[in-house]
Length: 359
Image 1: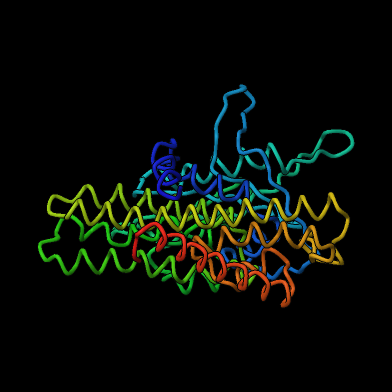
Image 2: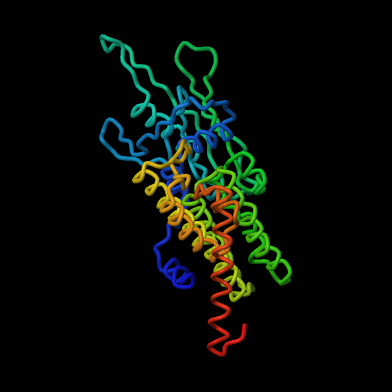
């Protein structure tokens, strides 16, 4: 069954444009997680009371010409523009200016009562670079020289480089939308690979990243559905990058890719099970104050349903702490789950032996 899911995953059309990956993550991720991401990205302090507004990234000028930027977002009174850039671009400063003005016209303009005064709130910009070269600046500055003003007014955009953050930094700062591009730090060495140990180290690091991400579900730092998409996107970026190398071992790349996709399927299974548990909890009205609305399993029938779903996750190798966190099973419920799982293993073993198959 898991193999079938992986094969189906391979057939699924992937989002391969990089800004599309970030947009998908931002569109799906919970608001509090996005606020934490923006707070760390822009070095702002927000509270649990802070509010997020996702703004339309498609704008048009006074001549009705349409333009799509990457992201416009607001948190409380702060207005942000995020641009994802894969390569150096000499027009980047001009683009930042254009996106800033368009964003202000669409989402930050106010007129005086008699329309004699127009006020524009310009978004604070940041450019996230997926690659870093010797020519990439660490910031962009646009200076405005206004009539009758002695000093120029500067509009600056911060620059963030994905490769400046290791996986622990990304987790600590909750920079989850950057994680799919983690493999790109190895891009410059892929074409120069002549020692298989280098390739093995890259492959091992990809799996290490996933192992570092796994505990986040139990710690309630990210939703399993979001993590499934992040890891799947990272796998696509990894495969596209590695297959550009002339000397890479394509079989080993394929094996690493499959292991990453296996984790994607597991995270998605957790997401589906958690969604089902929430639905059960709402339908029965038996949840007792659980923040996520997941039933505690007070009713016997509901606990049996939770155990049935949890059994499937155990068979997929999902850790018990993750299962308990997502299912809402009590300690006694978890003990019953483990007992039933062990009995099913014993039954399978006896059946196999009776059939003449020794395991």
